[in-house]
Image (cartoon, rainbow, N blue to C red):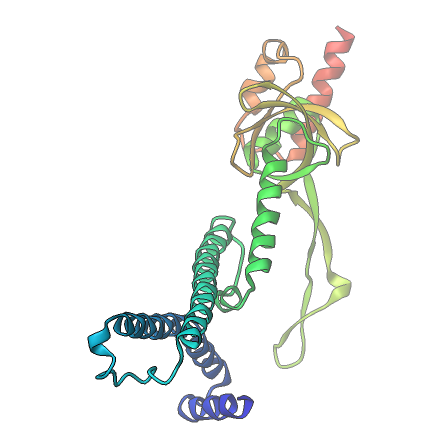
Length: 294
């Protein structure tokens, strides 16, 4: 069998002259043989079962016995019944396999959809050759992740996505800077004008993070939760999270009297875009100091 498969692959490669393309075509061929081969087996079993049933009916008709030229005529009644029972068992097994194959195909499509929805890179070939058990485990992992994400209270933190608005709200209302450290690569030009990376010229740079890790403590209102910012000393905050999404839309102050007391600050800084998160956080600190002095 292995020799036959090797010969088939060699023939495909002889036409394509490319191992990647040959492997893809070979994989598709195996998949199609696997898929359509099952249907044929069931049809053959049904045909054999029908032949036995016809033979049994013929034997029940006295006038048909003498002219019976069936290929099953040499079998005794008990042997015929035994063969029919064996075929029924085989038929049931094949039907079971076909149902599993159909389920397998449905789950493949479901997993593909999940990867695309979650913007996860994947290989369609890897999904085709994944076992049913592995696909179920992967889907279960996604569902457990979603369950944690959407829980009203969480035993462990979850990493959500945030945008500029949420980061700025966190800086203005809490004085928290949600930046991440990145390395800006440095380069030099060698003789001949070739640009090469020079690690000694790398610079550390801080940019607004696109994620934040937090833990929901309790639900306050629809889509509004008291949370614990686990990456910032477990500070408490109020986050707006729409169930079913990966995003934290914004952060509200713990005490909404902030909106009235710091109305001027909110008006000037909100959606301004002229300040860094660090500068916005400093405005918050200065406002709190002034309030305490007052």
